[in-house]
Picture 1 (cartoon, rainbow, N blue to C red):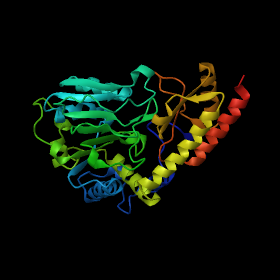
Picture 2: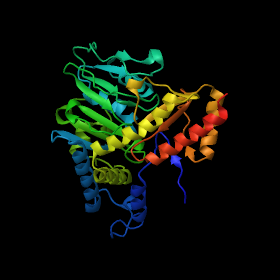
Picture 3: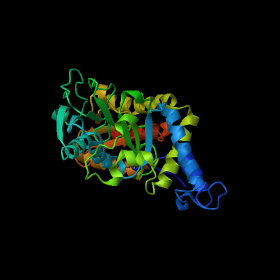
Picture 4: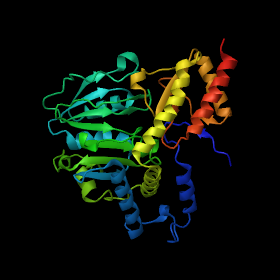
Length: 361
């Protein structure tokens, strides 16, 4: 069977080695006579799976002991509510708006307190990361929220904002484990697994212990309490067991590659192949300022929307799928997460060169 090159933004491509290993274990996980899908989350077998996953994630990111790792449900969007419910003690939070997901998180936080925009790139269709110098951080802000990599518009923070001592919260969904991170610079990191780590349905939260308190509104749903989730080690109720199992396999895959420093070098090389072509193309052009370009989500357009539609159609027919840009943006988007091999990027560029010759007027 020939697999296509899947450029979906999420659910997204997973390493073939991981999928093959999971396929081999589908009916019988390591001689236990059942699939991980069928296991009780209270069993010793699954406890070992989740413990190993946490240990490997801590190894990859050098997560300090005073940070908890949680494997939760509801995806990253559920964290838009969970974070303000648990962290907004002064009922004030500052946002840097770089696209749809930051905007949605900002709107959700506004239900629970005073949410303030301290920087935005909306004026240029979110094609850049705003100036992070001299931000007007609210003196009593509970935290500052960023979306570290913008999946839709294709931008990336290459430096973190000076929060003037306030807690930094990062939605790292589409760049998580694509490069090293200094966890100590954050109070909380969260990431929907379906973009770069595993299947949809699992969200990973890394939270500093001092932020986990019992001081939350009385109406907070029990599933949205960090203290409860932490005390029960992500298993207050049945967690997304199979998703955690696959995330754990991806962690081991990354470790075997040489860790996050190694995958970062690979990701830079992959992105450069596509960006170098776009920079010299006479038909296609990138839509993001160079200094803000994402290594994970490459957004581009042609000179004509009709050409965009033709390209997307012909690309799919040639084995390059899910290149259509987000519905509110148009154009194209190639999501080139960790599992996308550089051969896929080179093949895409080769196809784009051929398409350009045939369609450039």
